[in-house]
Length: 188
Image (cartoon, rainbow, N blue to C red; front, side):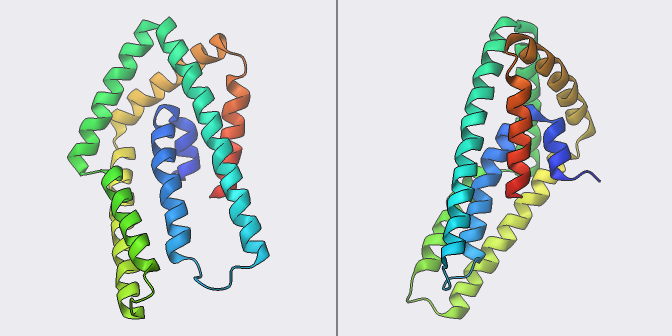
């Protein structure tokens, strides 16, 4: 079984989507499941560092997205392959019920409810269990998508062809991808 980092490295066209959906979940998890009291200077520094890392990841993603869009405009055959992959990916996501936007909205609602000081510990614990169960279900759905061999083969082929074209279009592509992978590893 591959770890998510190797899967992300193999699947950059899905990378932005998964990172976009995973980072808010990671941050929400830290806020929901992290200690409520004991906010020390070290914890504050750690959160500030994580926010800085997330901001840099977002900046790199914007740069890579821009390079990718320019590359796809210059290579219509890749753009068509990308559209086909996206359609198949969306079909698979719908098939397995993967809906991260709904989950994120629900997680944010739970986060607000958990902050309510009038809640009993039992109520707060139930909310956290609800969040954990929804997070687990979403992870299983995401794994079902990643496990689709046909989809992943199609994605890998497109990824390789797109990366070659992106590097030819903009030489800083490789450096950005390497930095992104390093930053993602630091927050996992």
